[in-house]
Image 1 (cartoon, rainbow, N blue to C red):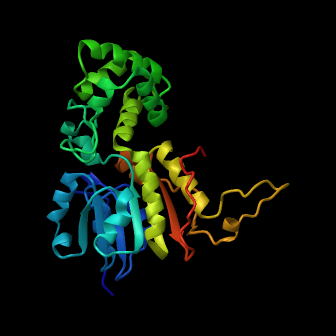
Image 2 (image 1 turned 135 degrees about the vertical axis):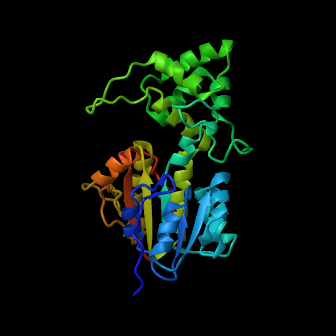
Length: 341
């Protein structure tokens, strides 16, 4: 029996969050096909390929990630197939190359550590860079940069974005200041916007004595909005339901409550957990009698280990949810996964 190399999360300066748990959930076997819907640095894809002789389709909308993937030995050997696009479109992307079903899908949501570490991408409020945040790169023709949003949207629109996607309680205060300040000087850089927010908001230390940067929620909100991240997630979950073969495994890592709420509600619905009327006046719809498309090994999210949180502080907010595809037909009902838990 061929020995497998150890699963190492830290590779080439990038940390693959909850990698051992992801590999355990996907359980790769010889001859299977997998989708890494958020390829990034390729940590999940390469770990899957180390576990068994299989194939991985790595999807990413970031051109730099695809350029990196093209140089991998796994790509040159044909085991890793990079695909340009959004994971919400994975079904169409795979159909384009003749693939109608897969055995496992992994999604690592949000911004990658490499994107955060590249100041020129505009994701970070720690270093100065252009106020961009587009995941498909600064040359994108599909969406506008964050600078367009903060310099042209109305006060109410900005406040709604900050509150809805960042859960920022001071959204109105920040939006009003943005609209006032941009008259004199439009917002062009990350530190310019972060500095405004820092002047407005006071920070309180956490239990460990550390404080969260006051611009954290606003930057999250603007990034999610310009990249349509929550819509992408909803489309991706629906596509996963269509693509996974019976017994196929779905593993999703989220980093904040907005993402996790969508994943949790979707899996609860698709595993038969949605209530069907009240106990006094039950309604037995035909759909309620069908076998659910997913089984859940555990209803609770899996947290990262204490060791991982010490090694990689960015893992602390991660939550992993896992589901197993049944042989039931994919649901033809729209999901209400975006609703509150």
